Length: 266
Image (cartoon, rainbow, N blue to C red; front, side):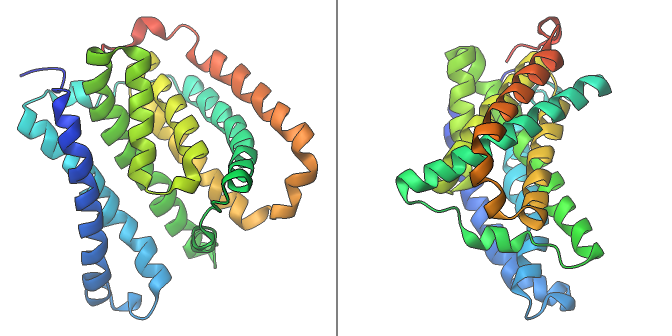
């Protein structure tokens, strides 16, 4: 059984994932209200609960199928060896710093390109009660972090880095991560976050750090949508952008310091 997936399987996996993603979205839209009567006539709840089948079956499912078809060792493609909790905490703090910078890059990108980030996403992640918080954190933060990291930093990065080199493989993995989100207005977020997550995966040889960092980014987006008005950010750019850069650089360096000896091939 091989340890590294064939690179050509990535070209198969990306369109397969997109097809599975849309298929699960359509199926859940039709079957969700039938299976869970409480979803009837509530498009927002249908969308939120749809994250579970879409992410687990439409994103994670194709990755596991590719592993089976390519006859690859699951533990090599989805490495889940332990990472020190203090190191993961530092990665989370670094991601918080990056999130500050991305907030402004996203706004500037929207201004330059006139591609506004979809308003419906902000409305979707508005909490409407304690139970809604549990659903939002689970469906929007945790489940996508797990499934998307296993697909991209797991299968895709494991296939590309050994064949095209470290930095080319990381860049291609980040690009694929961005493409799979199908939201051109979110390019700054997906590319920068994708690069950071790929570096974590490479340096630690495990997916736990980037799953935690990914979940942190999504959780911060939920908190920002609920507690921080858009008017807060503009006047504070001169402070928040440098602050975010310093937080990211310091905690990223501390979190990855000494990890190169633990990295796995790919």
